[in-house]
Length: 267
Image 1 (cartoon, rainbow, N blue to C red):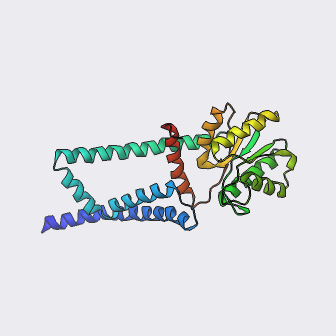
Image 2 (cartoon, rainbow, N blue to C red):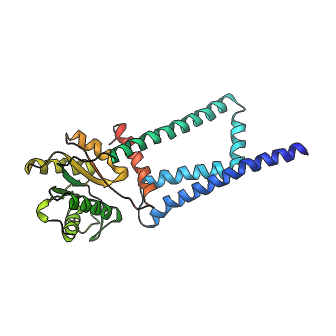
Image 3 (cartoon, one colour):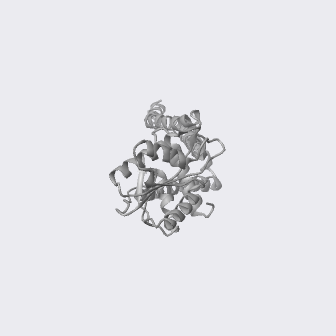
């Protein structure tokens, strides 16, 4: 009887932190689900939801989870499987930490004083900028106001579901805010970040603009943008835009996948 009570108390000791962690992962899960309700669906949602689902099972179903692990460890193949999964999990956490460090480092890279601002495109919803595009426009405006001698290239073509190009949308709003149209160059053909930079480089060369760049994009996107800028033999600097809080987990995970694709040569 005493041993049973001890075992029960041990389980309660295990369950309390697991319940707390489960609540954390449930909140995180909702942050991956919320963007779907607003029309944002990408690989970031899918990976985030899958990860949170697994962690909810590990935490809230910890007794069942531990029982499965103990059963697996009774055989040699099972022990190998358990330790292999544990090793991959630890390596995965370390890898995510490494990518996060790269993102933060790129985000903290200031542009040179003599630079050309390049605002990377993002979705236009009908005639209006998406929340993420609006954040980029606002960051570009703040930088251009503080540096009145700096020119700006707004980038991004017109998607099938957009009434105007992303570049046109950005230019119109910046002009409405008071930025002189003479300072703004439009690149309105690109459909991805690589083309954004490549077509912007052509504008830089044709107009004898500075090859030092100030890239305006979301915080999590700055590292991948920096690689593309460096590959184009331009000098990189960051002007990060703040991401809407409930979109950050989804696009952060999406960016981790995108950077990995770059590393393995798939993008």
